[in-house]
Length: 381
Image (tube, rainbow, N blue to C red; front, side, top):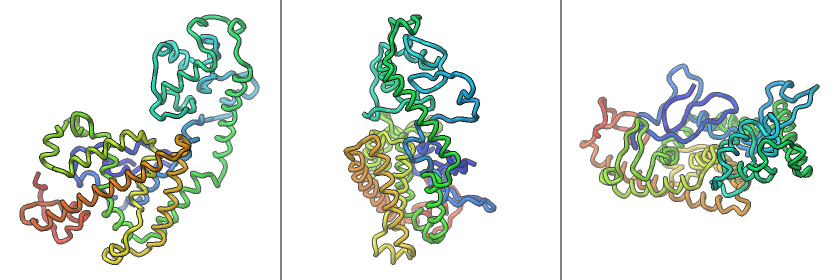
């Protein structure tokens, strides 16, 4: 089941991570993005958020091919594979053994110059071959694809046997790993699920509620980052709010939101990375004075889990940034998100002191601590 709320997507499909970023219908419509399960539903919003953003975190999961049956392995017959992506080849095209997809890609793009958005070499497979055109074209050239070689027999265009063996061994190792993980009970994904389940069981409903309310706006900001375009805030219905109007309404808060959302987009997060970053926001240790005031109970569990997810994010980023520059940037980005969240809390305090001038939905009032307000009717825009 998947909800349409932009704060989190209620995905209960095992081991499948859907895109975490989805702009909202309007910037502050809390009734849309803070939705709890209806009575009778068995999935809590807290664990759904954890599962949704924590599965399939190993980078290798994005570069392995899926084997549905032993027939795909070509047992009992000779099967040759594309030297670019590992899919079944259809013959020699432009001098190299390739599939139809890579043949067409090279025909269309051999004269183009693409830029890799990750700035590091991407592993090209049949699952992700459309993600990075730059690295795919680079690999085409590395294995010897050439426009001049079109329609030539393979004997006329010699292929480096060492390079060919390397590519074939790489593909085979990916398939072995996939087969191993399909029956291995202690894989990283399964261990992550166990960790999440432990957190769900050990943390009290009151503590979960405190964390959700404390960081609801921060999570909304990060997930709605793609909606902050050059021409204004993009709504799900196709409408667009010009920046000047946006700033007229939200002032300094709106300007800082736009600046931070731009930084988030420029980080080029993968789905797994943005998911772990959101978990870091959610599980940040709470200052002792706030612990006492809010009545938060399991402080040690929160600190331990935050440290664990911080290490996971560090590992994720190291795969494409060995020098850890991205990890350092994310630490700074976390501080910026927290600062904006505090600025938003100041805006909420202003509402509290002028409550007679506002009509608020009960859910909005509950999420942001306006506990005494239970009013019916739509919010004043």
